Image (cartoon, rainbow, N blue to C red; front, side, top):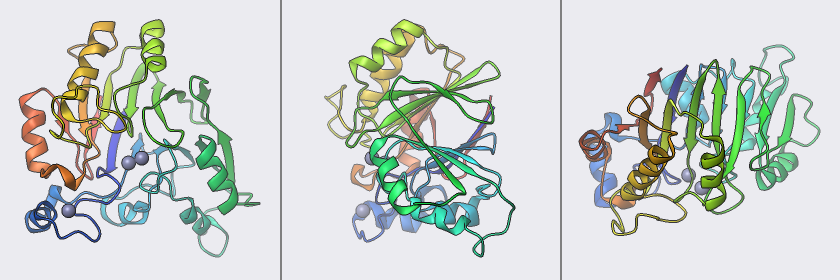
Length: 273
Ligand SMILES: [Zn+2]
Ligand SMILES: [Zn+2]
Ligand SMILES: [Zn+2]
């Protein structure tokens, strides 16, 4: 399996779209991996995870394979994860690549938004996602949505194919007990996990940070997954989804990750396992 990150920042981007704070100016000055756009990933170049307002930038800068992907799983309807307006560019006259239909899997609030924006568009099939109700995509990925600890009606995803298992877990704070119960009952062996590390070292005393995780919460989540048996020494763990508010840029997150056994995401980062 190949997992590629295209956008690794939180809602405002890093640097923030309008922001002149010290951290954003440092990111601008350093450039390279310190410049992070809004959330998007892909698996094996065929399964899209989230469709943010920065999708077009990902096509231009990192070769996001928009014309190869015909299934998207969406985590929630915040615009840094789901911007359905850009699917209108799939219509005849805006793009020419046959009669391909795009499947979009999304929970209720995102479903309603997409239904309004893409009403009667035959090139899009919307599928309603509900936590703990698994489904299989046309590419053969078995997907289990789990309930996230975040605003709206968000989910995190377990994605399984060919004996490999991915945990995609942002946006979320410390996992909800219903989600822990799922892990305890099913004990999936996770080969690759990415964790919401939005808050960096902010509120470091809180290891069950709600809404978004800080790094101590990520460590706590990894430990609990280890103690259940879902994660072991062969599992690849990555921190992702960074905000400018932490006073940290990629270089700082990378140091934190390296010291504690995590890889650190950046736009264009690919992992094969
Ligand atoms: Zn987000
Ligand atoms: Zn800023
Ligand atoms: Zn969000």
